[in-house]
Image (cartoon, rainbow, N blue to C red; front, side):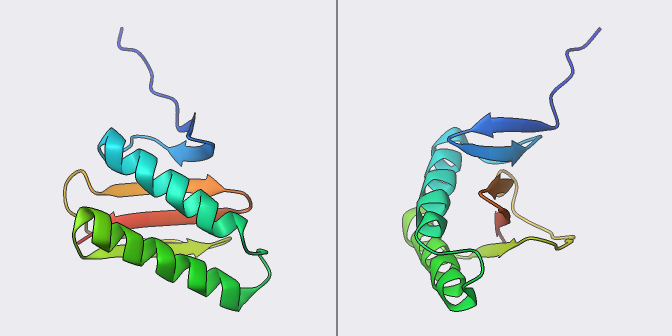
Length: 102
């Protein structure tokens, strides 16, 4: 019988949705950078959150080549097409973060 993969995994201080479709080096960078950027702003400050999200996007574009997309919030749905091995969805603090490349 095959081993069951857990739906959520605690990785680099975040709750990451499985299956993870991102190489380990990019995953670590994305989660740690996003967590650090969001830790500096209160969740109810929209302007600060927008700055943090922009910083995450610009960091991903610079580190891993363009065109990354970053969505952050408490209640959203999505259906996206992304490059293979270029998608992650995780929770940091009280916010969900989706980062993908297309």
